[in-house]
Length: 338
Image (cartoon, rainbow, N blue to C red; front, side, top):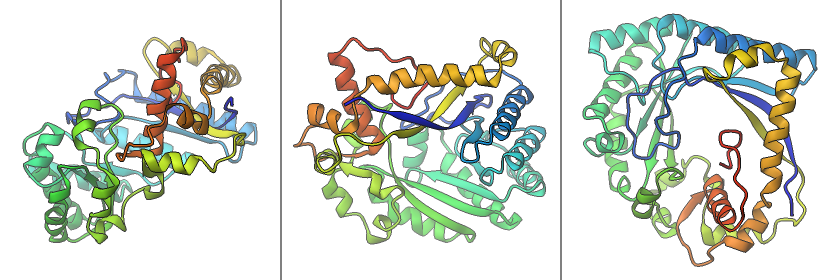
């Protein structure tokens, strides 16, 4: 059964800021920064936001992804905060993952300056306690840096969100990690995230957890797993999709518009209508060439596999099997599929 798709928004990708971590589990990988001026990316985003309003697309979301880490200078941070306000987007959150190391007094000044322009949230992303976390992110001292940032953020008045990663090796460290974090006031949200292994097949073989391991997690962890309904063993995914309709309705996705030095001048000369029409056509050809998830599972699923996958992961696993048996090669970067 061929997929049918609709498009619910536009993600303008401006990878203009460096990430200083080397995370073994990164699903984005260390793609090179695009060296396009931030203001040009913001101008494109504003242009498509105005196009959306002119077209009266009330439920159509236009937004900009602007880097894998919050290594923005103050001028850039102000510009991004202003853009987010114009777009009526979610509140900006400073992610400490991949941040450049600073001396304590420099970091405190850096955090205060951003608090003064209205940024109120900070996020810690931790894979166990030190030294395990440092090994995972490839940066000695990263765990201590996160905790020092948490103390400074609490002192300044930030709200602190915590993402704590769950894998075979981090499970023994979760309760000691929580105990250490609980010593620092200011946490407003704590979620446990099952690691996504889409770009780390070798690690996945050693680190992906089973349903049995999941069920043995402390209750305080299981009750706060992020996207818990979207994480199942392959066995369970096959049982789930068995009851799905063979002719589902349209699936709604975001279009991806990646800004590069090679593309930006051409995009600036094109109309929004032409760009959207081109993106929709190329993206639709990819999605409609891939069978629906139910059919993929029936053809390529392993009913004996107890390992757990995010919904996107298990689809990609089956899609890779499908691509191997066909001659279809999707264009990269347009969809979550490839």
